[in-house]
Image 1 (cartoon, helix red, strand yellow):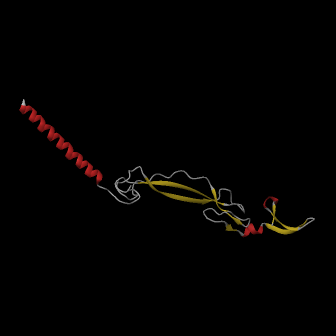
Image 2: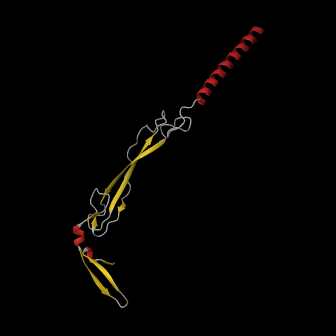
Image 3: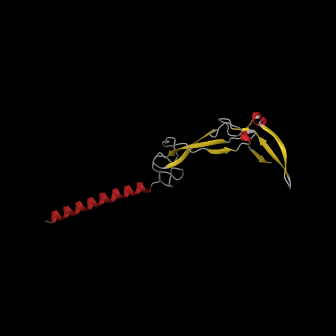
Length: 160
């Protein structure tokens, strides 16, 4: 009976020792830092591969409101996301696909003597647009004299 108890006790001690050693090894591994800095490092460990670490963008310029004199230059953008690799502190993992284009927004406001030219970032002066301005004529009212600029575009005018 004593031999059985001592064998059991030795087995228990041996088992406890194995558990203790393996626990210390796993704790030692957990305490070992993989990195100390970088966009894909949390200060000690690499961030997972699902972690977004950056993005790229594209801009497209165009004339969504037409090519007539005075029409503005438009732009729209799209982005794609960059991910951590899971085994590096650098942002060198997979790159996602392009997301959809944004809605058009005004990139440059054109004067009546300028127009939008596809692919350009800014309004372009146009002699043809300048020639469409007919003339400035004085308009007399009871109290003051103001100038009105008449233009061919739809017979519209505005006070200068």
